[in-house]
Image 1 (spheres, rainbow, N blue to C red):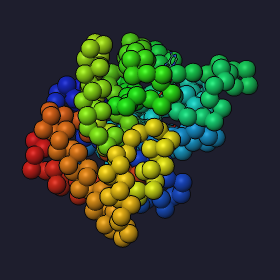
Image 2 (image 1 turned 90 degrees about the vertical axis):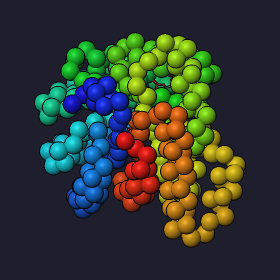
Image 3 (image 1 turned 180 degrees about the vertical axis):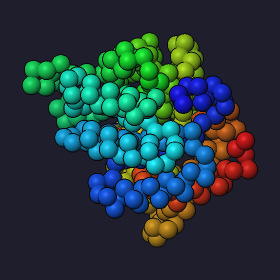
Image 4 (image 1 turned 45 degrees about the vertical axis):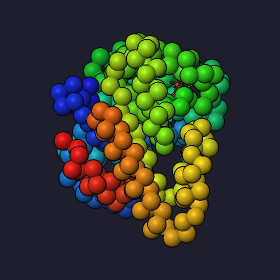
Length: 289
Ligand code: FAD
């Protein structure tokens, strides 16, 4: 089912993001974890696609498997990082053939970014170019990334919003946010969007902290602010179990505040784990209707 229709029909959505495992054992483990998360009746699950040779194949392979074996709505991420248009077309036709109805269109972060062409062949420069291309197929519901604090390369929040609008004008029907740890960034982004006439559903991207150093690295790469108090709190924790527990409490509080403010769409960055997300969703169960 198309994600835009799910959100329109139910007024809420819940999703989990995974990355493609590199081994058959990893795939089996992921399937078991998704099997456990299925008890939360996710609206969809998504699979990342990272820049680099063969990653498109890995995503394509696991998308097919998850689509066939989980019975869930599976959304592949597609980036403009590597593929030339000529390489992307068969992949899109493959997804279409599987019956995939939703895709997340992203620029990605290739090392070579900044070149207008690879080997002289045309590729997509911005996610909006990819959205336009995908919209031409007329059978996908297309999602895009949005940034509560603005994308790292955006000169200012006004332009960040304008470029987001460009993606919607080209055919994007919903947005998923980058992780954020201060909800006011999310609320201010929604205000900017409203002022600029952006009215597609926005799904809040939640990152449960289970490994603080890893999240710090993500935050450096993406420009996401980690509040000083939070850094101090996590740096004081020596036992990894305490870190996981603090991460669960933090994400639970974050979601409770979002729910209090009327937000009903959540996308969990699982990092292919299920334990922390399970605990957070169990904590939220009394308030999620
Ligand atoms: P764009 O929307 O193209 O924006 C990139 C930058 O270009 C922004 O600064 C924007 O302001 C600017 N810009 C846009 N249009 C124009 C224009 N016309 N002129 C000038 N500047 C412009 N990465 C992966 O590699 N694989 C994944 O699977 C993946 N999944 C993700 C899932 C989510 C939910 C999110 C939030 C991010 C994900 N990313 C993934 C990361 C993403 O690819 C990076 O954040 C990337 O740097 C930007 O991607 P984008 O689609 O937002 O790009």
